[in-house]
Length: 309
Ligand SMILES: [Mn+2]
Image 1: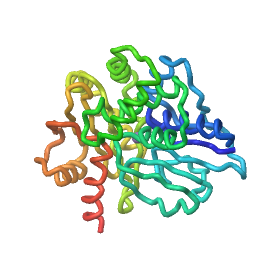
Image 2 (image 1 turned 90 degrees about the horizontal axis):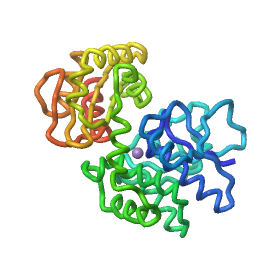
Image 3 (image 1 turned 45 degrees about the vertical axis):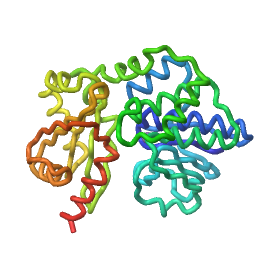
């Protein structure tokens, strides 16, 4: 069996790619299933409810010795389910600057800097003349819109726009679909703040130091963070302790107004962020345009590597 999977707690991009690529493999006569592990977020749950379709299994138990894996939306061996050995990965797709792909000695690799991994999947399906089902196309379209923040962040490319335009010809979505999807992940309260942040952290070890960038993408960021400031600081401190993080950064993206609020809760991380972005040393910083986490990682990583040498 071919297992199509992604990183721990996949977002809508990972989930959409799993659903679409396993649909394509099955239609091509290669038995495949989409499997995720960890938890899924509010945005994935929105698309699940909207489509009434969720052909993805939550991983439990062990994989068989003959299982082979396709990784989507990640090429980071540290980010995948730990029982998968890199040599059993036969194919991978990712769209961000990357890390240790040399471990994937048997994998066909598609790693290209576009806004959404779903764009790479759409292009592959098109190459094979395979048209995804309308519900799958809805997942792929949602993934592109989400990853590019409605085509407004700077990782957006013409390829993302083309892929989304093509998908739109396959589906009929209400005019307010994007707004509804974005609002769905903005339902953040003191009750779910920990869960929302924790399900989307992916720590990395850089220069021997465990580092994490927590990200939320919501509407009404500033007022939400102001109202939940105390709870947010409590949650960040709790995660820092639980995960034994050496460096910890929080970034909030306002998906409607297009800016970030960056926070740090310790002096060392504050100093790194200040150097990485060339901004004054302060625990809170508001940007003028959207900075995605995948853009922040290489800047922070470069400063940490220099420091830890
Ligand atoms: Mn992605």
